[in-house]
Length: 132
Image (tube, rainbow, N blue to C red):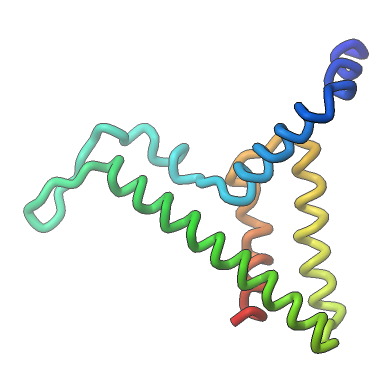
């Protein structure tokens, strides 16, 4: 077990950087739609007399989910920066921002799945309200 820990801790910095980059992308902009609808790929559903492929709907939903998250992240950053510039930072804002940063740091070090991000995404949408 010690050899395995030593092997994983002493990886080259480039490999560690690429691992962190992949984890950030998968965690913060990953989609839970694939794993929840994956068993239905290749199937179709009827609606108003037409047949629609489940895969097409899943791709559309995944794209919409990813772009709405990117939009929420942008609004979150905008709102947080504006609060700092206007000096309207409250203890509640610090708590929410701290929650996001702590989650970011913790999930760089442990195993991730997109479904783990659901809780912190709620805080991101709270911060996005500041950007609106």
